[in-house]
Image (tube, rainbow, N blue to C red; front, side, top):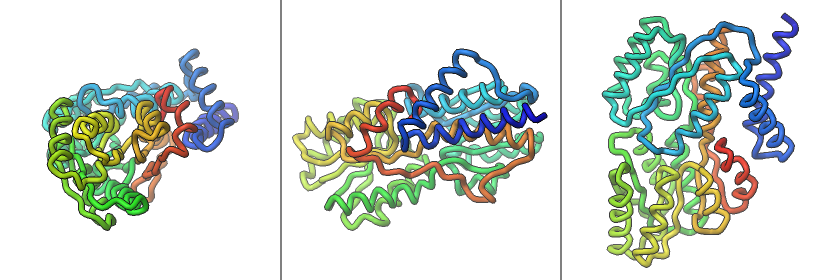
Length: 334
């Protein structure tokens, strides 16, 4: 038992070192060493039963953000001796059906996003009725508790939007365009509304089809051509930042491009000044903590948050921090 507790302590310390990696080169090396060791050995740090956890998200195909979430979840799954299943669909009804399928498989825990909560309510209720613990991640913080989830892990989207508005004010911006790439996503609306709440200038929303990048570029370009007074464009996902940069170039605009979320391309663009700033919600932590907290609940009845969301963001990343984070974005953990 003493040896088992020691392993648990080491495992939890490893999770903490990952979350602090951006603050210390030593912490970053330790986290990387732990990642390589787990990948090479494939051995759990605990001797609890091999439970099965399913994560079902609203991700579309090719969204790099969710690759980072999965990276964290898989790392925690190795450590916690978990059989990890991942599935996704950007159509809410199909996502709900995937949750139903996980319930039918009698998994031991479910991690789910609530980007379109009304469509997900019945599926989550079915999981609860079956006695399967549920943790929500990324989107749906306001609905999570009402739906019966143990806790929610992510950032408060309104607070994140407000942070963007404050940053735009610091930069002296007067007219911003907020690009929403998934209509009906409550988190996206909350982000733009949060920006409008604190931004002293004028904010306009632009709805685009996020599954068609050429159309996204054309829509942004048209807005920038039609209104030369737009001095900032805010995209709500890292893959769309580069598209907005291309639209700015083609439109002959001088608008600053800023974005939610971080990846290697965004970090590089921050470093060279192509982008102004990014809002990081630390998706690796969302995946890692979701699996880890389900394991803690199954093993020890632990719940974090005290009825409130466990926040992983927002953190404003500028050119000054980009270099320090480049190592982590390249390995897919930031």
